[in-house]
Amino acid sequence: MTKVIFKRPRALSDKPFHYCPGCTHGIIHRLVAEVIDDMGIQDNTVGVCPVGCSVFAYDYFNVDMFQASHGRAPAVATGIKRALPDRMVFAYQGDGDLASIGTAEIVHAAARSEKISVIFVNNAVYGMTGGQMAPTTLPGQKTTTTPRGRDKELNGLPVKVCEMLAPLDGATYVARVSVHDPKHIMQAKKAIRKAFEIQRAGLGFALVEVLSTCPTNWGLAPREALKWLEENMIPYYPLGVYKEPAEVK
Ligand SMILES: Cc1ncc(C[n+]2csc(CCOP(=O)(O)OP(=O)(O)O)c2C)c(N)n1
Ligand code: SF4
Image (tube, rainbow, N blue to C red; front, side, top):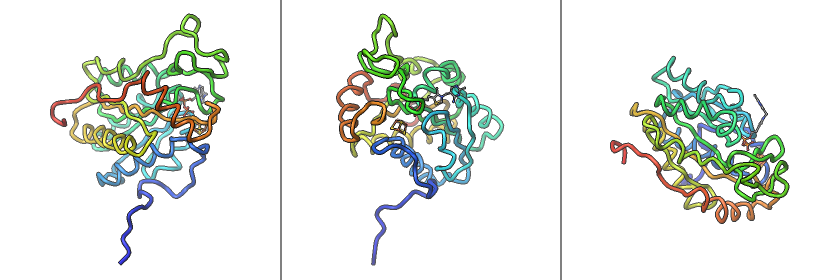
């Protein structure tokens, strides 16, 4: 008898991703969809899409989806969750979206301990709009708006989102993971599952930051981009759990 060991999650549509070769947005979508399948919550989940390269996430997830404008995904997710508290609500955002124009939204959603799950994709750059500096761009990193590298005197230092949110009393679960190799992809899935479990248990705000690649704007081949992430992003953005409730440890 043939045993199926690998198939598309039901919570992902069969539409091919538009992402560039080697972009890890697709892996992160898949992990979210697998968690939705594993938890059996497909008919009860609402996702909120950001601006940025993942703007078309509504075409990819086989769940109800909303489109939020730049930075407003946590506010939109808050509205949905408060109106429909029995739904599982997740927001999916890039770093330009979440850590730049949406800084206030994410800080206050966390402070209010909204019972939503946020997937925060940090690729250290504004991907969709051509590779400008994002709040998460590393010191010295070249982008179209920092052609000589990010200079702390001129451009300031990066925002470390997990470290910023975890001290808030309302933040229930905050973790940083990466998807640069299979072992870390499995760890990332566990963290995403935990963020959803925390919501299901009604415990409060959960955010998983996922370190991701943008080979196109980094000017690197896909494999080099994974290496660049591992060697440059992880030392600056340490992986780990920054806040975790005792109930779900
Ligand atoms: C209100 C508003 N302002 C600006 C934009 C332009 N815009 C679209 S995508 C984007 C950058 C997104 O970058 P990021 O959130 O890092 O996502 P990525 O593309 O890297 O996945 C910007 C500034 C917009 N769509 N809406
Ligand atoms: S521009 Fe970057 S973030 Fe956007 S799809 Fe391409 S590789 Fe991914």
